[in-house]
Amino acid sequence: MTVPPRLRRALVRMRRDIAFIAAGMTLHLLPLLLHCWVVMLLLGTVFDPDPDTPVVLAFSLPLLFVAGWGLTEPQRWRFRALCGVELPRLRFREIKRQFGYNLLIGPLLVVLELLLLALLLAAVAASLVLVWVWLVPWQWRRDHGGYVVPGGYLTVAGLLALAAVPPLAGGLVRLEILVGRAVLGVSRSDELARRVEDLTESRAGAVDAADAERRRIERDLHDGAQQRLVSLALNLGLAKATLTDLPPEAQQVIDAAHREAKDAIEELNNLVRGLHPAVLDELGLDAALSGLAARAPLPVRLRVDLPTDLPTGLPADLPQRMAPAVEAVAYFVVSEALTNIAKHAREATRAEVTVTRLGEILRVVIADDGSGGADPSGGSGLKGLAQRVRSVDGTFRMSSPVGGPTMMSVELPCPM
Image 1 (tube, one colour):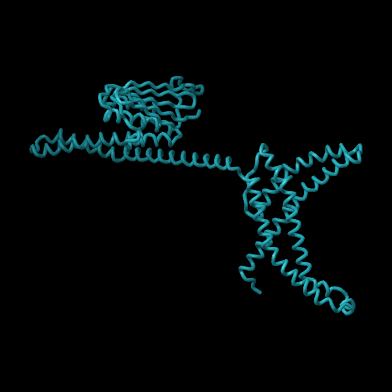
Image 2 (cartoon, one colour):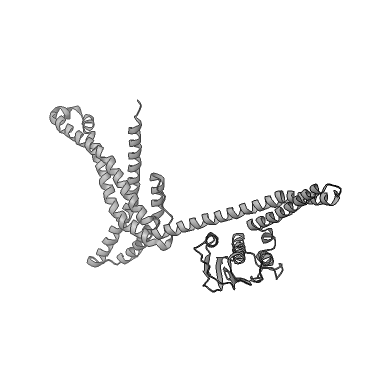
């Protein structure tokens, strides 16, 4: 005989719900019995003093404490194994929530669980009453021939009660899951803290992945296209130097091609430095910023103050390296700021860049003596800088009053 799929699913669900309720009744009944025992002991000390009562009471109270705390793990197993609900492992400092569920809410839930299981047993017994009758001797059935009508009523009532058990059991299971999640689950503050931690980790992963991709593109350009252009420029230079008997028109074409190749190499060099400078990985932030200051179109005063407290055995004057993502953000902030000063800072004659590390904060300050008036919300360049700083949990501030000076301050977290 084939059981219909819908009926089979209903039977499986009912079996799961009854098992969940029965396991909960066992776990909830223990604190209720301990409660009754402690109350009886307390009443005994008041109305019927006994020399042994304080000793027994001193033994029962720790049992009540252990039940309030130790039953949390079995409850977690019950929710996970029977209903697939994962409850977090609560720490000891959250013992009030565990006491509230095991010692206060559990004794209330056990009443509903006992009533439901009693209804189930009564329904099964009533629906099989005619079967029970056929198990008694036939003489009794012959002497009590009127048992069929009341037995039929009991059977119908038992079947109706049995039909009501699955929805009642499902409702009680949903109630217990709701209460369990509310009391033993993750609190709203813990959930938000965990969400913030997950988002921070995922964002850090995205930043590291983007930085690694820029490094890869920089290596591919440096080792591929740039080398080919250098080889082409060398060949054109060699042709220009050796092929002196060519017509003037051919010489002009070679000269133009040589100049274009050198210009392409210079542009590619700038592009590679803009993606990720190799000197930043090899020599660190100080050397990379020194290169930026040297290439700037206006005088730049650079001051880099990084700690040198390195482990024994390393050079004492070698700065302590920070996370690659933090160094990259600091480099590009200075690079973009110097570019903006050269392009947009009217009447600017000099710039000053100061990089200091104070504990777990890297502070970058870029200032110029231009006429000011820069608006961080007016262009995409400064907005992009602010977004890049915020990608590593940094802060971006800018002061540029009309008439100058302009100062950009960036603080980047760099844990030890």
